Length: 81
Image (cartoon, rainbow, N blue to C red; front, side, top):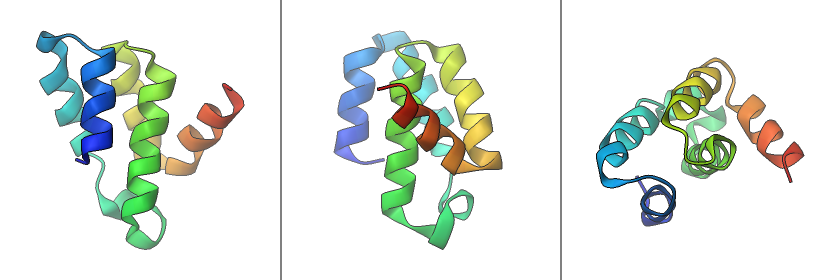
């Protein structure tokens, strides 16, 4: 997990929620993203956190979607702008 992602988690979630969010995001591996790219993985994590807006249940939901097709959450986050 990159420092950028950890910073976003600290910003959006309280102490009790942070480890759950880290665990959930960590369940997405390189095998879930195109070309097993660390950049795609970080973009997926950023998109999930953006979409979740501090809601742990949403992190779980978007993580599940990202495991099916990571491009969906990236697209949804882009549309959310």
